[in-house]
Length: 217
Image 1 (cartoon, one colour):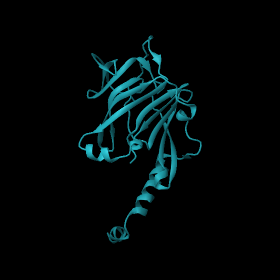
Image 2 (cartoon, helix red, strand yellow):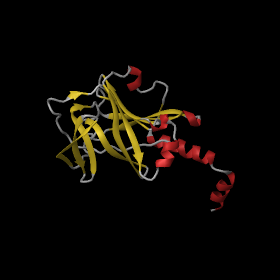
Image 3 (spheres, one colour):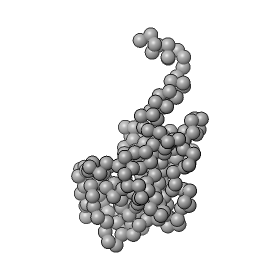
Image 4 (tube, one colour):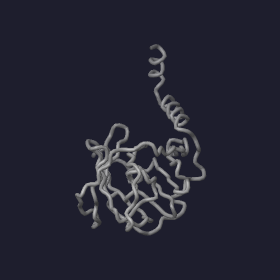
């Protein structure tokens, strides 16, 4: 199961002077409405969602197989990593341009609440998407991203599903350099090339009678 997510843009905003760069690991509990039983059946590695950050590099891991890598020294793109080793296809790295021209309506609410003992401030994006963030810390993610302040609770959209994430553990121990680096053995490819690979894989998994039906049509 591989989930690619979209994080909304927030427009340019200067960080609070008191905010500190976050270096460590934040781990989230996740839930998908209507899929509680299916989620419970997945192995822990497939339900692992976390952000790790150190030395200007950050990684956002989504359910084990999809990851987003960002290096502040390369502000023009992120790397989307997808691990299909279990399917015998290896891992792929897809450079994804960061479009500074895309922005969204952002409202910084005065509403706050406590999450893991941290003060969480409510941010509303495009009138409906809610993020709860700690303004005490900021991430080395693109400055226009909703991931700029440390996100403690938020929703992401993926494959027509809404995934809810809430922080369950925060560690300020620096992750290893290997944890935040793009794997050296991943296959560099474009999104278009990756989609072709996935289509070929699906065709290979499709029963022969189904292929015959498609040809008849």
